[in-house]
Length: 172
Image 1: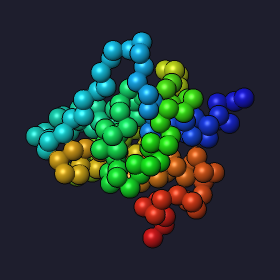
Image 2: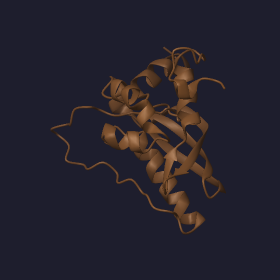
Image 3: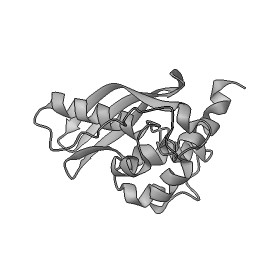
Image 4: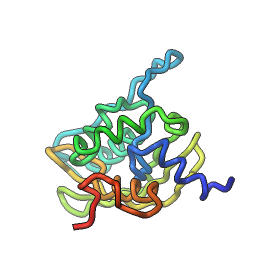
């Protein structure tokens, strides 16, 4: 099957996140007994410089899409994440979720509360969805994956439709 045809399945396994806008929230709901690696720590607090903001955005964006990041932390790394908690939990642990991740390639700070993120969604380290554009939002002092990015990934997974998606993903 071509990589392009696998994208809906990849997103299904990864929605968080997405994908990223993710591609979607990638992760596993059960801890791995063979791994002692701790999930990446979320960077928070108001950035003091654009370099600091870029570092925080990159760390938080990649943590959101990481299989090693607990579901509760991924929810906290998504703008208004509590609205999507059930989706993130349902998607965690899917077959491809444990193999998926995101790699931020560029961050452009647009304002103190918004940035544009260029990223790739990877499966086992190989790009499956390249050169995606998303939005990071500074909410409560923490840079988070923007809900528009996550909804875009959910829509992609849903065949381009917003019907059946959470209210936050519905057009105004």
